[in-house]
Amino acid sequence: MRALIALAGITAVAGCVAAFPIDRPSDYTAESKLGTCRVDLPQSWKDLLSRDSTEAGPHEKVTVVAANGDGGTTLVKTKRNRTTELVLHDHGKRQQVMAVQNDGQLFGVEFDGRWVTFSTTPGPSDQTTTYAWDARDDGAPVRIGGSGAVVHNGKAAWSDSAGVHLFDLARKKDRVVGQGKRPVFLGDAVLWQQDGRFRSESAVPEQLRNAEPGDSVASDGRTVVWAQGEKLMGWREGWPQPRELAAIRSVPLTEGIVFPRVSGDFVSWQSESSYVTDIRSGATTHTTEGGYWLEVHGGALTRQGWRVAAAAPLEKLSPLYRC
Image (cartoon, rainbow, N blue to C red; front, side, top):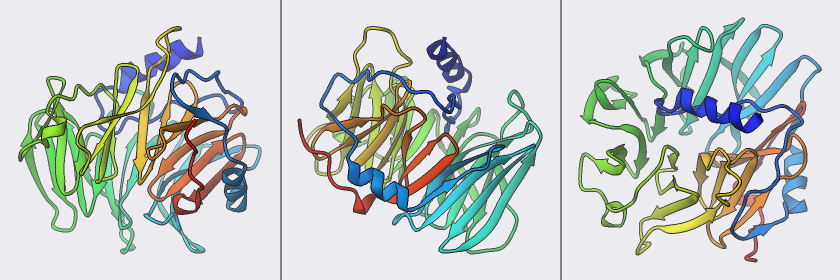
């Protein structure tokens, strides 16, 4: 039943650029569906996460939803009673970005170290509004569109009925660069999907011209990753061709590979529960503990689960060794 609910949620948000992960039961985990190299979650990773953790009260949920390049600055979403709040934590400094009330939703948070983009809705079935906020300024968030955005080096990108937008956040200038959906940044260029292929305003890298990305695509500006059937694929400049990074078993039917996130040499992704893949070795760790969900955000590995949120710098994580 949980898998069917997840599949329904994915269908409902598939048209958005920055689809938000489905909330799972706080004690939920699933058996591994991994069909490639699997290793145990290193104890050193657990130790690092335990050093910077936040324990939520009985009536709140705390989640680290974004981080800068070294993991020192984070954005944290807190749900408490009837209020959902997005807060920037910067070396002891706490600054509220936005709060929504009652059934309001706040999701799709992205951060490039200065600019924050995020989306809100008054309720689960209402229209989306996407905002940008400058962490160097104490101003209010500014509406930039009606569909979830990705952000990189001061530029935001999203897609809607008009096409793929590229928005200069400092200059507040928007232009449509093509027709398609699910844009990501590769360097300062924007890639998007059209007719099951990657497209770009300039030439698509030769190695990506025959790729067949599914609905799940992500990039950190250097490495682009995507789901292709039951495989998680990836490519970065200097590679002669895309690589298979991980794969899941096709039987029994699952929600597939969804919500990939990449930073440096680590990719987090979901398939009923959470996985983290080390690009260097091709090894993947799958969390078997209830409510122990791991995601890559900027320069941090984040944990969410039952009343606990934590973050650890990716640069301090030991490699996952090849099977």
